[in-house]
Amino acid sequence: MIGVIAAREWRGLFLSPLAWTLLAVTQALLAWIFIILINDFQNLQGRLAGLEHAPGVTDLVVAPLFRVAAWALLLLTPLLTMRLLSEERRTGTLDLLLSAPVSATQIVLGKYLGVLIFLLGVVALTALMPLALMTGAALDGGKLLAGLLGLSLLAASFAAAGLYLSSLTAQPLIAATATFGLLLAFWIVDAVGAGQGIASQFFGYLSLPRHHDALLLGLVRSEDVAYYLLFSAAFLGLTIRRLDNLRLRG
Image (cartoon, rainbow, N blue to C red):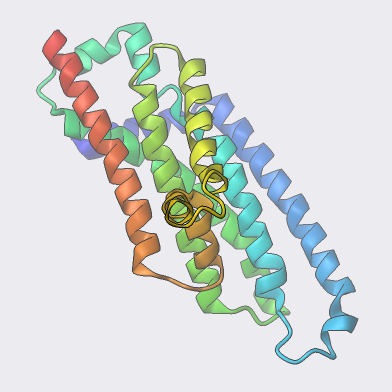
């Protein structure tokens, strides 16, 4: 049943003009940034030639591209997740779904996987840009894979948060705004405790981009992966509990 729900959501996204428009705009923006980064890298070749252990194309082109892609996902995900459950509540189809012999866990995981597959498609299309450089430049495969892992984990975290906030309201625009606000808060939370000892470490650990930056450097640490997995699991668990409460209310 999870697969059926996921396939339904995935097809719904690909039949949506909004999803196609967002995908086209995102890829056009990233392609433009990619070209700018390549031009800047070519202009720096003369300076880099005389440096020992000079940064390569992976550090100066791929890593900055993935940072911009992370921001693109931050803007894109709320618009893709806002209708997952809020639209169902607004139209009354969620009541029918909750009355069916399907568990809340299956509903949540199905909808989550549907939107996550779409977002991973965005990540895959982004990966094609640096892969195109392999014909004329030496890429650091480890850093490239770590960066893609980071983008995938970010997408999973964003989708889980967006799904939960979509379950709290029957208005998709409110869900999108709340999702963006929440994700932005986790994006800049490390600035709150800057220079305050233990508080700085705590807020720094909660920061979404800080863990992503480590992966962009090629450092695949268990604490970073665990953070994203726990972040996603927490919001998925909250969504399941929310649907169970709605089911009990009838």
